[in-house]
Length: 242
Image 1 (spheres, rainbow, N blue to C red):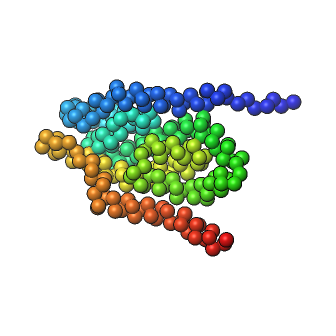
Image 2: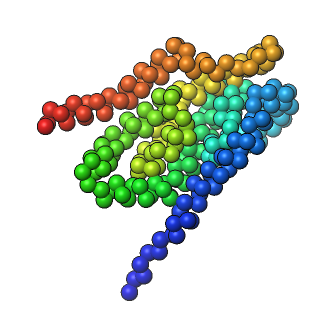
Image 3: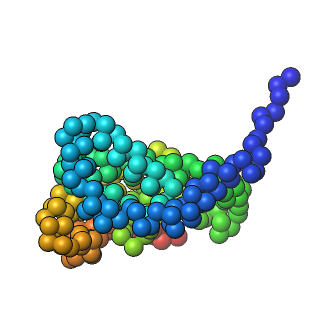
């Protein structure tokens, strides 16, 4: 006689997300004065020397540190992206930034899905009426919705990691749309980092408002429209079938 599968106690399923939220709350106060451009400015010569002597070790350490920043929603993600460009250049810096942010995002997704996401997804699967239609709509437009979360700059990164887990998005779709969708923003921040040394020499801090400039925001919104097209087409076809 086969034994029924054991389910984890509720508190264990919610523990990973609770740990992330707890560390994020502590980090918001304990690290906000350390993960800054001033810290990068003060240590840039040491970091450059370390890069010249131990490139692979520094790249690995940077990747792990950035994953931790994203996974625990710590302050300083923008500083980390700029640092990636400063230390490793546009190509390698963008690759490291995208990889680290994607891994960290997947870790948050898995933590949220294991607890609260599993509960909400089960309710949506067994729901009827409006809840069932919402669930089906999310499934039909999952890829477009996930790309929109990444491409529209007004959606906070942590929210874009959490919401898909709560509504039962598929892990592989979440992972690849995250990696693809954050590339444009990563290119912007990494390119700022490439020239950050000259900015520091002028006694200034990098202008992260570049993301909101028309030449950057315009293409991002264009990509967002392209991502939304499948949703619009399905909506139009659905109305015609009524």
